[in-house]
Image (cartoon, rainbow over all chains, first blue to last red; front, side, top):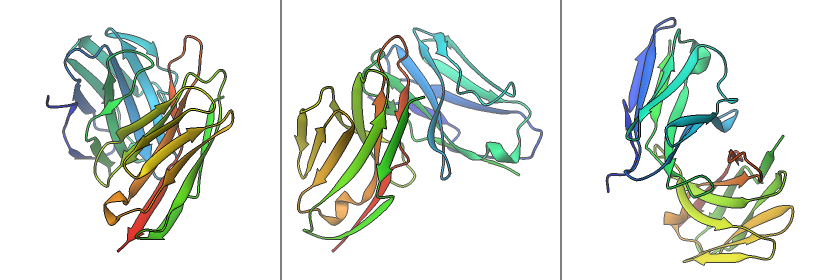
Length: 113
Length: 111
């Protein structure tokens, strides 16, 4: 099993540009989570899906952030337009079902200049 | 609002020197208390889940315990390879399966 796969591993962009982060969950997992990690705030939940349906997006900072899960094997997190304060490590995680342990990807290090 | 607080922020031990990490939580109807380990440049890796006060789980040199307000991660005779950030997370009850993480304890074990 390859685990949760995230791409890209690193992303450097300029303020105002669109950024798309990608995630492939573990096959057979029904739940998918997007987290953001910074030194100041730690790991923060942005949004989670169950069976491809968004369940709770209350952690999405503002309308510049959007997430989709068009099928069980792919999800995207998009930031448009990006701002320097969006710089962080973004993690995707999947689980067999809600309430079960999460399996994290290696994260995407985003730097917005 | 669910809250998870970990202490200390950082802990430096000598190899073989046992200690404990603390996780205090405030959630509505705890469904589960999770411990993860995170190495630099990697995602968190699952260690334990605890579901009810009094429950204990062990894995090698680590033992996690749970009370109604806190969880402890006890590290017995640590080795340098135990150096990592240890994260605690609480999941409340009801229909919300949100997992709230603490900021972690950075553990360094010196040889």
